[in-house]
Amino acid sequence: MRKIVVSTLLLALSGTAFASAKCAKHPKEEWMKESDARAKLEAEGYKIKKFKVDGNCYEIYGHNKEGKKVEIYFDTKTLDVVKSEIEK
Image (cartoon, one colour):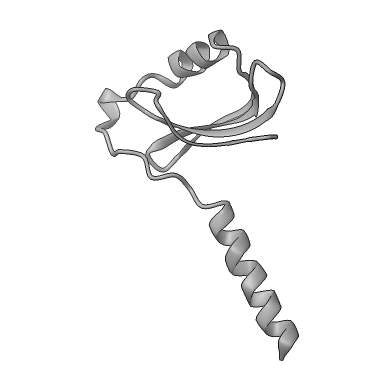
């Protein structure tokens, strides 16, 4: 019984750790073009390994200009950071 409780707790915790960000919903025609967003982020020093749309967010996986691993969610219209996870 204890193993089931621990397993359930671990699953619940891991599910919340990787939950998507809550980005504002903008009409698609107001979104920054993906190519422009990617170019702007790369100009800011990000090395992007993966760029994708996650719900109403742009999400990148890669490294920042300091070389640390990042997972960052951006607003699709303004490119403001909504949520970030940066390697320590």
